[in-house]
Length: 100
Image 1 (cartoon, rainbow, N blue to C red):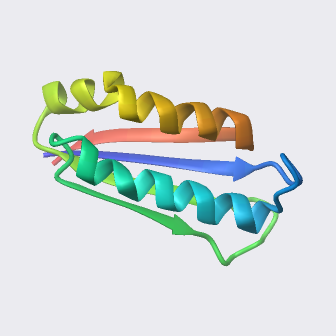
Image 2: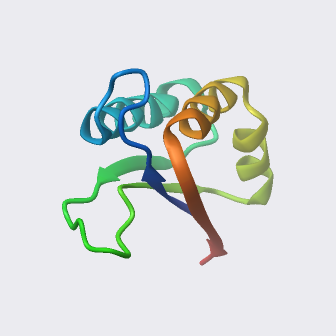
Image 3: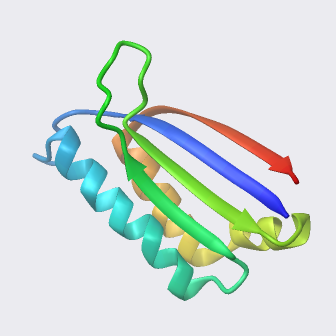
């Protein structure tokens, strides 16, 4: 099983959206990928309520059966659409992939 975790710090006031509105938009789009990409075993997005100086705003947690399924997800057109949104609204991000 592969765990894929990504966290982002979001920009404020992009397209007239606050950081909180952007987080809700991205959360919805991330979680909708489960219906579109069969290789996803589990996916969720969490909006951080901790606003400390080192806190990230949004976290994606997902699970895949193996590296091949993670690669299919990474290259999937529906993932590309969400990734474009994230690039537009995020200042930066970090990722961790690990096997259990």
